[in-house]
Amino acid sequence: MKSTLVTGTAGFIGSRVAQLLLDSGVEVVGIDNRNDAYDVRMKDDRLGKLTSQEGFSFYDLDIEDGDALRRVFTNHRFDAVFNLAARAGVRYSIENPQVYMTSNALGCLHILELMREFGPGKIVQASTSSLYAGQAMPFVESIPADKPLSPYAASKKAAEVMAYTFHHLYGFDVSILRFFTVYGPAGRPDMAPFRFIKWIHEGTPITVFGDGSQTRDFTYVDDIARGAILGADALDSGYEIINLGGGKKPIALLDFIGMIEDRLGKKAEIVWKEMSASEMQDTAADITKAKTLLGWEPRVDLGEGLDSTIGWYLENLDWLKDINL
Image (cartoon, rainbow, N blue to C red):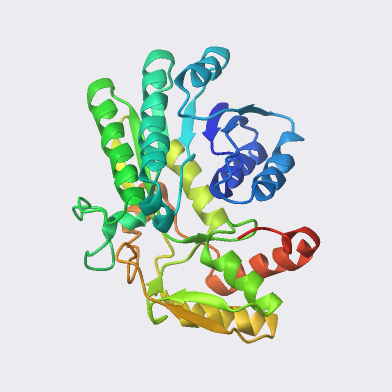
C-alpha cells in the first residue's frame, strides 16, 4: 500500500491505525466529523498528533454526507480503505437508534458506492463482537450472528451484509474485523477502562452493571490496529469475517477492577446497577482464523496493557482530570 483512506481518524482505533500506517511510510488521508458523542478534547488530542506528520492529510467531514465524501475520492486515489468511523456504544444506541443506522450503515454504503466508482476494491470494515450475543463461547466467525441485541449491533451487521453485496457484485476484497473490548492509552472516555481508572484515581464511586461476574476478552489497541492493517495486506478478492480479540481466558469485570486498584494503590467504591438486556454477559474470541489468514495474534497481555494505559492517564492528568464522562 502507498496511499490509504482511514475514516474515523480522530477516534480511538482509527488514530492508531493511521499512526502505524504513517510509521510504515504509507500516505494517509483521514476523515472524521469530530462529533460530540464523547468529549471532543480526546479526539482533538489524537488528531493533533497526526496532523503534524508528513504524509497525513485530513478532511473534517461526515461519512453520512455523500457529496462531501465524493470530493475526497475525486482528489485522491487509494490502495485501500479502512472504514473505522462509527457511532459506538450499546446503551446510547437504544436511546438514539437513528444516528447509528445513518452513520454505521448508510455511511458504509456511501463509501462502498464511491469505491465502486473510483476504486480501490479493497476495504477493511470495522465490526463488533456484540453480534455474538447469546452464542456459545469461544465465538467463532462461522456462528450465525443474526440476532443483534442492540441497534448498535444491528447497524454493524447491516454494514457487514452490504459489504458482502459489493463483494459479490463487484469483486471487492472485504475484510470484516470483529473487535473485542478494545482498551489502551487515549481510550474512549465512555468506556469502562477509562472511566474505572479515572474514578478510582479520584475516589469517585464507580458504576457496575450486573454483579461484576461478566467477562470480557480485552484487546490492546495497538494489537487491534496491527490486525486491521494486516487485514488490508493479506487478502485478495475475497470476503472474510475475522475476530480480533485477546484469544485467551477472558477476565471477570471485578477482577479487571482489582487490577486497576492494585496499580493505582486505591480501592474502588462500587455502585451496583441492573444490567441492561442489551448487554452481553460474556465474550471470548476464537482467533484461529486471524492466526491462519493474517498471521496475527495479540502481543500485549492485559497486565502490560493496563500499565501503559494507566501510565498514559497519569502523565496527562493535567487535562484528563477535566474530561467529561
